[in-house]
Image 1 (cartoon, rainbow, N blue to C red):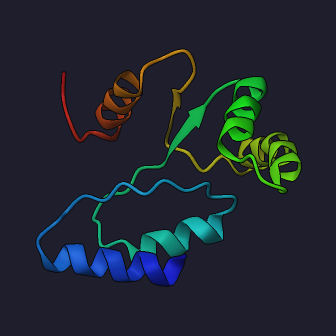
Image 2 (cartoon, rainbow, N blue to C red; image 1 turned 90 degrees about the vertical axis):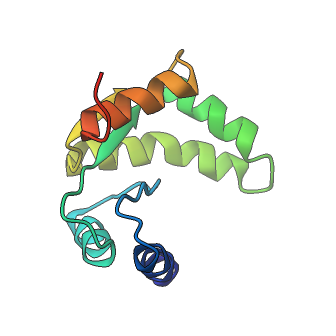
Image 3 (spheres, helix red, strand yellow; image 1 turned 60 degrees about the vertical axis):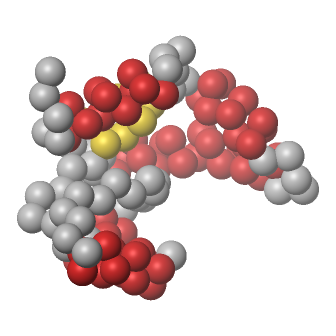
Length: 116
């Protein structure tokens, strides 16, 4: 994953792209430092999307219907606890019972990418 991120960021940076949005669960400070080392950005912000455990489990159930579904659904609560302990986020955006557009706009505002 990190080799691919390095390649993609390098390609886009060479084209003048200055902002990157990376969707990834970062479980510890080492993963965050690695991402910050790879992404050529002056300022980075970590947004944690939040929803109830039940909502997240339902999303994973719908998204992953294969043989690993049970393990992936069980991982939801575990990962949520890991993220609670890590506390790497700069801000949180609630991602439940809202449109994708609303969530995205709030995230971009809190990151300082847009105003209004």
